[in-house]
Image (cartoon, rainbow, N blue to C red; front, side, top):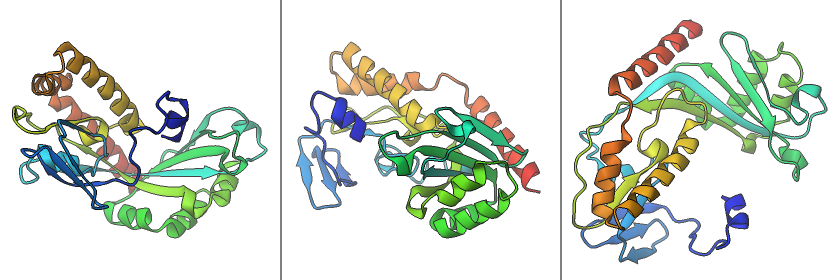
Amino acid sequence: MNRYVSLHPLGSQGIQWNHRIVHIDRMSHQVSFNNGHTVTGVDLIIGADGINGLVRSFKYDPLTDTPLNYLGILVVLGITGRIDHFLIKDRVFQTMDGCFRLFAMPFSKSKPEQSIMWQLSFPVNLTLATQLSRDPEMLKQMLLEKCADWHSPIPEMIEKTQLDLLMGIPAFDRDVVSLPDSKKDGIQIALVGDAAHPMSPFKGQGANQALLDAVDLADIIAQNNLDLHAAINQSMCGSIKIPASLFRRCSRLIKAVACRRST
């Protein structure tokens, strides 16, 4: 986002920081935020707030929405300082041992303390995954133990990662939900990325898919001459191009592999 602000000709104009939606009054065209700020005259909300985003609950009834499915995988993201090693010098590498998988790439040249971004994924039950996601110190200690005999520079990368730059994320997907017609009156609501359809495999597809969804949505709105109701209905009807059975099959395969590797 900071890079977008610096490169975009509008800069930060129109971007409101530290605003989280807490309520949407569709018929009154009004949106309320956690800081007490309220906006009226809203015609369109695009939910890009991730897998646990609140906007989805105003689009689909939480009682009938499809539940999240845990894939049996914890994804760990870390950013660490510069390390003098040929594997990580201006290049990408990955290592796996049949259970754990690590991917690393250059991250920032201007901030030496954030030179490398790495991602490590491994199978674990949901109870432990949840605990590790809430306790970065416990997570780091577990990774150091599990990867202690891995080749350099992996142990060094984990050791040098500060706790505030370490994050554990349990991986989920969600079955395709039936798509009701968008209500003609009031605020129109669209969803993109993981807010709309978290998918497996999980390797960074959420953010990338949100960017692709946004382009498609913008094109559809333009094609419908800014008729938001028609555009949202068209985007919803055309968004699922892969049969739901294939989504479920992919999810089952990942769960099966995770189960075998965790036993």
